[in-house]
Length: 80
Image (cartoon, rainbow, N blue to C red; front, side):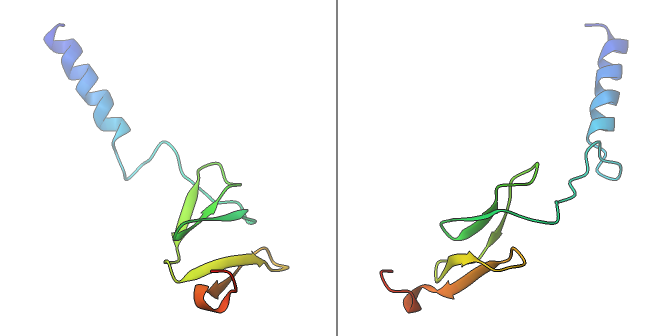
């Protein structure tokens, strides 16, 4: 590979890794479809899967009318 080709390749990589001007911007949708996976609530409906850590002492028992997850302490839910 020629020296000029290496410089061009390095320049292209620097442009891709410019975090001030990303090539892709993730904007979550308004309604999320939450599922609990261990200590995380994971959104299954957005283009990129994202999650929120809720810890091991909480459990998702449902979704309210606004689409927000209903969380309860694990000790207060029978069977857990």
